[in-house]
Length: 308
Image (cartoon, rainbow, N blue to C red; front, side):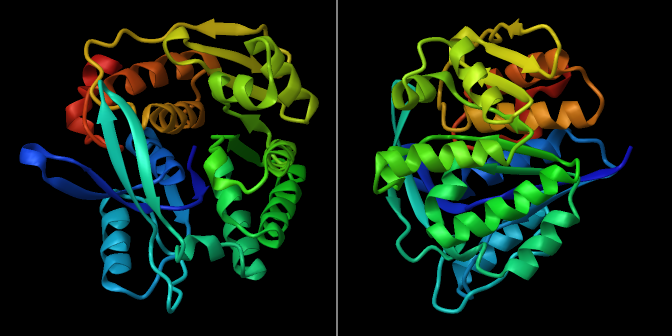
């Protein structure tokens, strides 16, 4: 059955390590990464659109061309004079990542500043995805504009998916961070948290505690990612299920582990898989992705036939 997915957030210029000490330029960001992997695995009769904002500069034009080349739509992305995309650099040590960021003039911070555009784009989608990073980069007024539209869309019966993706360095106040993350969960029908983040910033003593907290906020469906410890699912009144992590032969770069899980999980749910089957598939995708450099791994490198 045909449908449309919308992902909302910030795509940035990505600088990653290459051979001989050089850097390779790419484009990535948690919500775009999710859209990319959703597009890889969604049925062909589904569309995927990305909502952000970019500048009128050459780098913004190159970014839009790249996004379109992946099959993700850019129809609704405004171009804002005097703004540019943000930039980040990945530092890797033993497969683990750290980042440096330059995003003070990021156009994406203004993605929710046109309420009419925002409403029209959200209304056109069957599935809407956003993250804690989406909320972190917006002004408080823009956060409320976005969440108001998402709450209205949720009340209309559409699937709203939220990954808290907690990044403390993006927030000026820990209490406001937690309150805004909780507000994001209230606007969602599905939450995809990472347990380490939830334990660190909300004090959850167990995965079950994370599930119960987000369910109490109004998210009917929760999938808690716990890295090598797999994923725990609570969907509606179904029995709580644990899905083991897929075997990983070699860890090269964990940059997009969670994002690739999110995108492929949502794609398989849209295709009609059960939550357990969709999570098992997404775990295999994430295991394949972290065996390669960069956030976005080409489909042919993932050996999809083996994943299936």
